[in-house]
Length: 374
Figure 1 (spheres, rainbow, N blue to C red):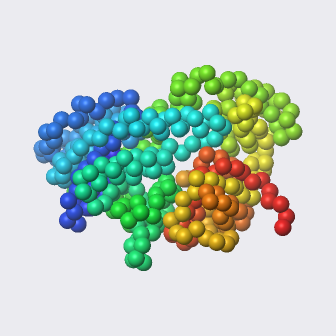
Figure 2 (tube, rainbow, N blue to C red):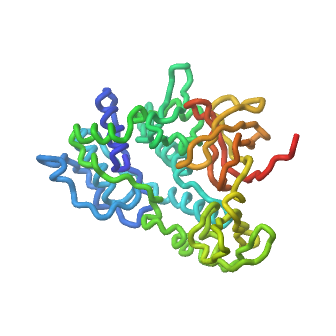
Figure 3 (cartoon, rainbow, N blue to C red):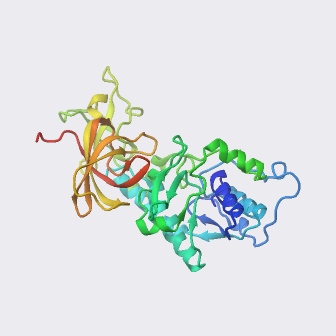
């Protein structure tokens, strides 16, 4: 339970269905402390829940003191046990990963790593210690067990679908996963929360990285690894020096703003090279790619033996596009797009679907601008 409306409604629905529910808040990497929220005496607010809700500071990510207080209040209203789990030490691994990926010239995805390592890693271990049968979250995705095996499906609400960030779940993990709100859209979720008197029914969504609550990831990297951030050259596709930058970590593939130079036409970051500390800029069309290679693969079906049609999603806020996928090694795959895609970024995830089912994916290792002719 993160203190948001989604996980709150997920818990409420499970209570309605007769499950013995235990609420858990993961204390992760926020700067403020949740010690004040760790009192063992949690009671529902008296009177109208909205009127009695605690005064919140500005919402910052998904693991702040305010969020812990909100999660505890919801658990009290639902009448379920509530525990704060101290994962701050483990969460340091995710922050180290985040900085290391930027320093290596890649674009990290800490939300996927958090699901893999903590929510369905450390939290799942804790659930097992309680003899729990399932781990449930408030993700907008679905688990279908009608075929005799657990399949991961997109959420019904296409605008909120979060199956992409769950790509790293293993087949055994799917068997004990529950996603109670995957059949709802956001409006329905909020209405259920309001009808049940949950004070988070109108709480704003958080779109920030929880350990970078000011959304200043550049400053976060500068503070964590100042010795690795240095001035370098901005070049074009022919290696001509066009200017300088103040650290390749400050830029992402496809970025247009913040380049501080004018060539008379719109320019975008088309490549980053950590070894030479250069960024390459070019036109929008120079961001186009025919495909990608990925490693650290995860298959939720038996890995296909041949080239397989699919739709491929290369970032959480982009639609899945027609493509093919093929296994190229024990821990590698290749995706070819039916139409060129822009700003494919090493370090991100590619998730492959057939219909609504997520069948597998991997971490993007290489952009393939053009495939050799057969």
